[in-house]
Length: 214
Image (cartoon, rainbow, N blue to C red; front, side, top):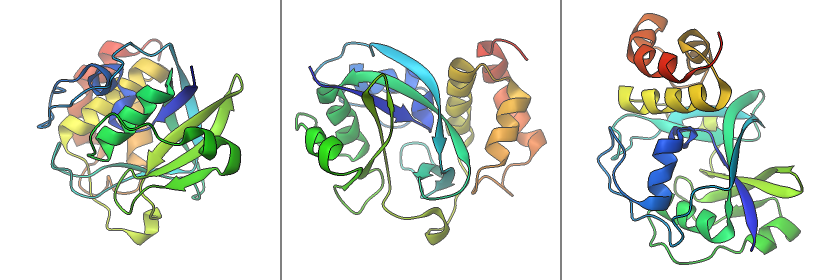
């Protein structure tokens, strides 16, 4: 069984949200119902990770309204992520749903791991795969757009999307509201639409419910 760590950095930081890509259904706050994967088994493991590069908000999401998170591995800085240990088949089905393609087609992950660190499957959002690290000799892979963050029009996220990211940051990294605000306000695309006061009000009920220590 081929295994891969899928590194999430946006709404899939939330385990509940990511679960819909495996089991199917509609996440709270979203307008889209997901098909789910062929194998609906929960991830074998998950861990907080730090990704070299930048996470930013852009595009206009028909699922959430407002911008969504993308990852630029060539940018300076680091970003908070969450790695889920899944099968190659599950990762293929998750990626297919993000690309709005039918599930059931296995991606050529062996070729990606052995011959390249990047694979561009299409021109749209989430159609570029990056091998960014390894955990226990298993590749860590994520997907994003092919463009760099300074080449697109930035767009702030809607409250429901930001709250979902906050859920995931609280779960995976143990952050409280102020830590999450610090992190999100440093991401390109969130200002000036969101300031600390507005973001704190939107996130407080979800972030403090899941965090561990201040």
